[in-house]
Length: 578
Image (cartoon, rainbow, N blue to C red; front, side, top):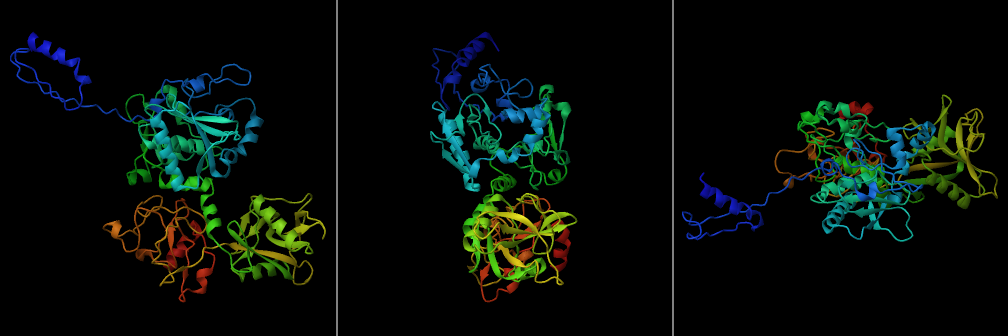
């Protein structure tokens, strides 16, 4: 190329970037001989959407780097690789920081670990927030969309904090995208969606899930069974970001490893060589499942969040009813039988006739409800049998199938249950309102009627029946998306965690069984059961029935029984009868 053309090229190189898209530049011949016309097509180069670990690299946002503790001395949150972030975008509060990085307060860590998960949840599933006065408009827009996405799929609500509210999230748009884990509970906590983080809603969803209590998926203790971390490709300063967390901090709640989680690292996260740092293996490789998507919450993300905040239980409490003569509290119905008075075995048998079981107290709210009810409605009855029984020196709840269930909540009176073999709710006297758990003998045929007391039966509350032509509910097209026991359903169009052949070939839009890209309860023709059901999102429970019942003369009495949870132990039994 001669100097003439070099000169022309340089003249235009300095101004091309300022021209609008598709601009035509006409050059007169007397200005540049030999060139009649130059057409310049200006194309805007779209920047790649970077992930949080790239956007947060080598930054120290003012809110974090100017943070001071009670002494007034500057204090930065402790992160990895000399940064203020753990795992690339997590700002550790003081308790998590001590737990992860360790300190000399061993007893402190042990004490905190027992209550950590419970305390990190936002009370009643309500995340309160405020906007920074100078927040970027684009950031505010994607945060709103992210909140709507979460609210549409769960029972989480987002409310603007009032002046009286002490604990809330302040949304800001400082450099980077970052958040604390869960409800910190010591005043204002910040969540930033800065420049570059506001290009896609999924990044804001990711940070909001941190604020609601989620860690990164690949931090699970069992992750090595599902992905391989290629440490040789990880930058030295970030190798700690690939350490697994223990079960105290990360509780999978029985859900499988979620390759599709919006909380999963991408395959090149923290790469030092440009090569992948995480490789999918096992079932994920077989199903060709990608990792690191930032589009929306996965089916399992939604299921876990709904489980953490008891969304399905809350929905059931609002939509279920009890039969006449039963008293409803939350998701259960109770029948208080003052007479006849029975020993333990006879009371169990009597409750079973109502498809119920002797009452089991699972939490302090249920305990308080039962105590108040017996005091108010039955002031002269001192003892009420419950479903607890001693087996090999340990008390268990006895369910409707006569199987022992671990007692996770207890409220025994001082000195109880000692040598007794069953339990009762006991009023101290007829005029007292004090009620406590106390031991009692189960009783036997020989000493009847001794040890015979009033008792309380319990059964799950159920939804009202719906009209239908078939007792098996095959025409149900409602939107219930969790099972009778409260597990969120797996999407019918997915093959994980449970693989199946229920969906027929062809378009899901015209599927006669009402299947599709959703997880609503159905009873498809390819695997017809007694009533609508679904595959679950939990690893060891393949499927369960849903609380859908048809108002029909064809409905059998057995349809009203409490559905049995399908576990690994009885899968073979179910398959053998199909």
